[in-house]
Image (cartoon, rainbow over all chains, first blue to last red):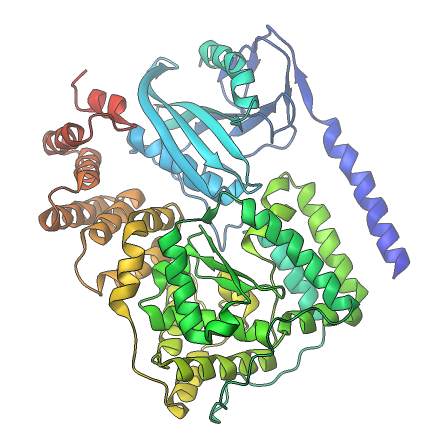
Length: 195
Length: 401
């Protein structure tokens, strides 16, 4: 029994760093193509790109770790597919984006997706307003949510449906301190986005 | 809800010897025994278990997910106290956890967690009382301790597999979905055995009989939750014979004939005929819109539709018609949008002041391509709620800006 446990522990230790190696530093002032798409952004400061993709058409950046500042790019989610990678397709499938959605349908789509992937328990939409994004008439929304770790996070997102596909940038961080601290840096990334 | 951890704990439980004793028994329930009074842990195992539960309760007490509304708490406590008696009731702290799932549990130290999804799904006081009484019976019979001992002495492998399950989750990028905080708030999964279920049923029915609640309600609530699980499965294109995906059944092994067994037990016991439909509805009413909205945020059309239909069968109500409209609009197929439109119209017939129904109606029609009617309905909504969170977006959608 002890050997099995020791072996398993050793295995975990070996596995842990390998996944960390593939994270990448995104240089300040350099345009970067994100989320396996033509979506291009230019960060004003250095960000970390996490190796594990949250979804097939998504990419996650962070400054201090995704629990403290979580910036996600969605680069053209197709109609009939979910935003994130399925966590439990059989028993708890993710909702799917549809190209017929109205701008007001995007916040509930994100809410249900986050409930399933991040176990958030409350999601309150604070504001939904029009905002041009990637040359299209997009939508911008702000929200507050209570995470599975019982921490209140503040979030904001900009989205647009271009050619029937959903392009979106979401940013959330603990409402206390972290959200406001990096908000200007996120602004800059959103403003720099081109397709 | 921290499914992987649950899965690993369940897997661990499978390794342990199971006593395969059939659920349910037809013999009459004995009178409720005298309550031993303020109970304190007896030995090191039990003291350890209590310390763990006390720590979780401290986290739970501070959580923003606990519904603190005084009247709702008083109502739930009242139902438990009527069911198990004042003396037993004093041993319990009740926490109403905001989660759209049928579940209630009781930790060995006397912490009772009642999910808002249970309050919404219970048709009346008697159904709620049957679930709370059943959970209390597990507590009084100290089944949690038996489970804990079995886990400790039965197999170290079981304990370790739970640890490795947690490690695996920590490295899978879903770290904070299955944190200790989650366990503290939602409760641990104490998987009971069939023999324990039977014992809890017997004592639970004893409580129902002594308090005058209608005994058949126990079978009704059970059947409704199994039907809901069936509808969820059916809607997802598969058959369901297993119910352990429902939070409550993850800890309570069940089968199709469980409701039948409960009916048989109810038959064998006199009980009363009090159901308490009106007090239950009155207690839920101030929170109904919130509870319905929480259900809508799940991606479970079949199960949610079943829950809403069961609620609708109790009588026409604008909040429930509105919620059914929202459910169909959210799925968004052309036929769903037509159904949603009908539900919103019906809700507005009953309650013309239901502003959110104007919003839903407008959005359903806009998405169907009926932009003129849609814009008119949204305009009405914006007149009623000019400073709605999404007002700036809606104004642009109807061409006002």
